[in-house]
Length: 151
Image (cartoon, rainbow, N blue to C red; front, side):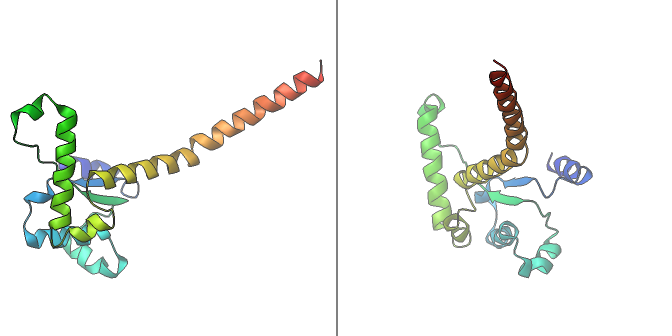
């Protein structure tokens, strides 16, 4: 349930670290897609509009459109199905009058979501894992130098 997830994020103060995925962007009205663009862009100049929408400010919002192809053979040929879905998503966002700007700026679609997740994952590794690991490696190297000097 979306409300439960948002409540959990609020209770644990995760909004600044969470990424929202707006699925089925192809199921919303024109009026709602304009609001969706405002939500995704999260510009400070639009703060009052975001507040009026009741927007939840997250690290990022990404709209996607992953309608499955209707042909039966795609049920058994998953790789082909994924390629067809990716092309359908690209076609949808490129052609949409409001959402095409998000597609062009790589803020919409599964590809954009993957890029954001990758960027955030690498940033997290650089802040957490890397310093600890480099510290351990430095300590081991120092210990190895001392052991070698004692030989």
